[in-house]
Length: 169
Image 1 (cartoon, rainbow, N blue to C red):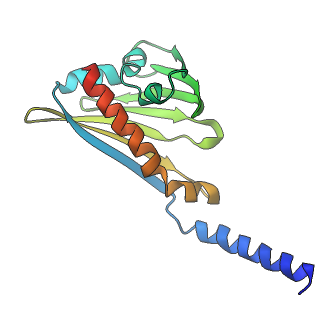
Image 2: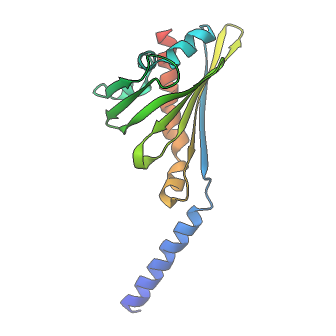
Image 3: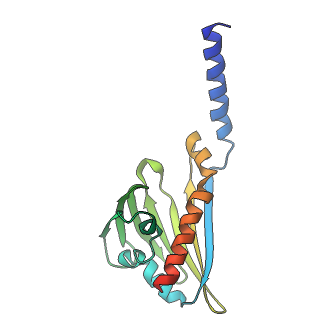
C-alpha cells in the first residue's frame, strides 16, 4: 500500500464523515421546567431586566469571575448585557416580552446565535417556568455533531438557573 493510497483512503473517510454529519439534526431544542412558588409576573419581571436576570444567571454560579456589562434600558425589549467568562463571550438581549414569556437573542460570535425563552404558566401552587433554547446548527459538520450534546451541556445550566430563580423569588 502506497502513501497515496493511504492518503486517498483517509480523505475518503473524512469526506464520508462530513457528509454523514449533515444527516444529523440542524435545529436543536433544549428545555427544562420547574414549578415555583411565585406569581408569573414576578418571574417575568426579573427575566425581562438586565439586572434582574443577574439574580438567577446560572453562569454566575459556575463562573464567579464572569464579567457582566449591562446595556440598553433597565427592562423590556433592548435590555441586555455583554458577558465574558470561562464559557465564552457574547451578548444577550431581550428581544420580545409577552404576557407569558420573555425571549432573548444571544450572540456568541462564531459559536452561533441561539434564542432562549423563559415562559410561565399559572398552575396550582405557583407557576410552571419553562426555560428553553433553540439553535440552528447550520451546515457546519462540527456544529451538527455538537448539537447532539447540547441537551446534556445546556440542560444542566438551565436546571441551575431555575434553582437560582426559585431562590431569587
